Image (cartoon, rainbow, N blue to C red; front, side):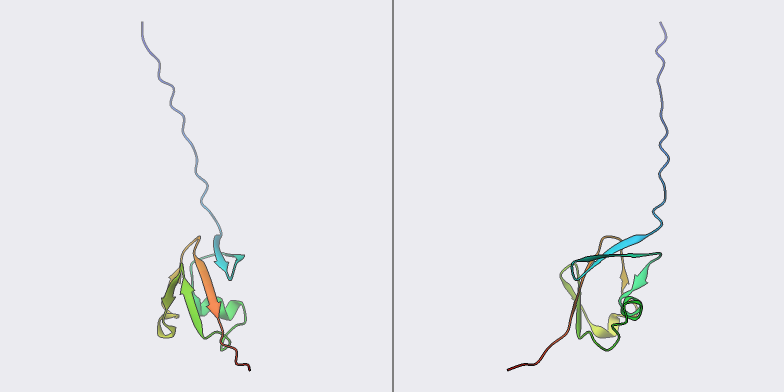
Length: 83
């Protein structure tokens, strides 16, 4: 008696957006983006003093080349003076 194997093919839909968590809020982007470009999109240029991706500090001189990945957690920090 012959055994028939059933093979199923699953189509994987390419994810169109990438999700980045910025200061605890989900943000969707259409494509890979650098920290510098993200700051432009969010209109935060010149307002952020430090950035950490997945708890790792990224130096400011690398923001233009550091590409964010789907699922990254980005923390943007500004220092506020006070008394």
